[in-house]
Length: 546
Image (cartoon, rainbow, N blue to C red):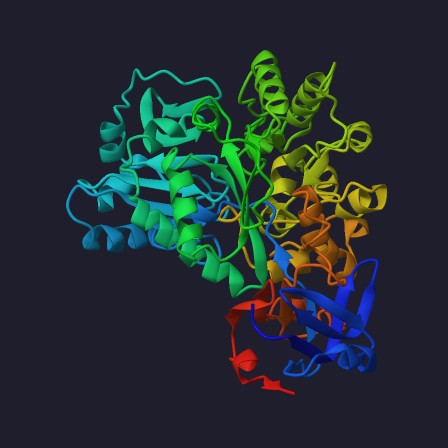
């Protein structure tokens, strides 16, 4: 542990209940004192270093309660196709062509983040178009939601996919006039993904570390990997354990095993892995199962159909009810938290019923803090049942920023405005854990905060203004609520005496500025247990001892 540290000269946000303080004292990796400056300074022992906030604000460090840290790290070296940079098919192809030039002949070229709704062509790229820039190298690009992707001809050949390959359960291989387009939806993606060479352990550990440093630079001291095993199977567990042992794990991690039949939950259980919250740096807490797809990709499952102008239909369930019930009952009885993906109201209903059935008899739901991930489009009755059972929504407000206009196009204004009801959840006591689902959406917490404050999309459309939060509420959802969803609210998520000194110092006091200014705010300093994991300006190194 480093010597004690005193922060003053700006506001300290203790948490939603505690409000603001003038100073914060950190000692032994924990908050030793917080409150009036004079009182905190009096408690500081000799040799305490002092950091002047210079009008900035210190908050509990952000908690990324739902993201995919390893895929995010691996994606840092893949072709970036995100919509904020790529708006045309020509730019998609140009970036793929550049990557192909640098790759050995026959090596896979992977890209992530395109949004067909934001492209000038208004559709997914096709295999034929990818073939034009990569006739020999297999190419696979993933839509921003992660629920569908496009493969070129070489990639489909490597995966053994042909015209007669059947659609798997919970997935689809798109064909037009009998010809493969290259688009793979939902569980059909595994046909291609399983043909991609696995990353080495060295590569994965490096990706974990790179992602961790990136998150630390944004104010995160806690993160998660929400589908461990879907990139490299059980090897991912070994990579995380090695990253921890080598001091290359930057965030405290909440790990969620892939629980679909193609996941690793069963094999990990057979090899002895059990729910374990005792290690704050690497907690194996939950299992994930997919209920449906994405609202932007028209595969989230709804009771009412998508607009006819968007394509109609009611989306796609990943599994029939009996399979979902069996999986949820199995993982519930094994002691795992259930972190189940469901976006549309029909999928939320299937998952909620499955959880309720799993909790019958001698294994009640009370105290288990099961989670419905995303939980974007639900009705009041479903909210009431979740509250009664202590089932937590884990939403991504940033979806409204990045995909809100597409929700309007696909579902209509009324349904889009009711999506991700943050204020309603908070006021009803659901403890919604705000997160990004990165690399699906940007991991930038300030865009997420801006969305919670304004309900604005990236085109400036305001959707459901009544669901906007105050800055204090938004930070609460991004800190304490995440800790609560990980059974860690007794030690993380607020800056009260005795809590772990996970702190982010922001470049501006976000509680006292216009929401638009939040977008350009940065994290200047991130502490994990009082130890700096990021120091933008080297201020802590220069902090003087008294």
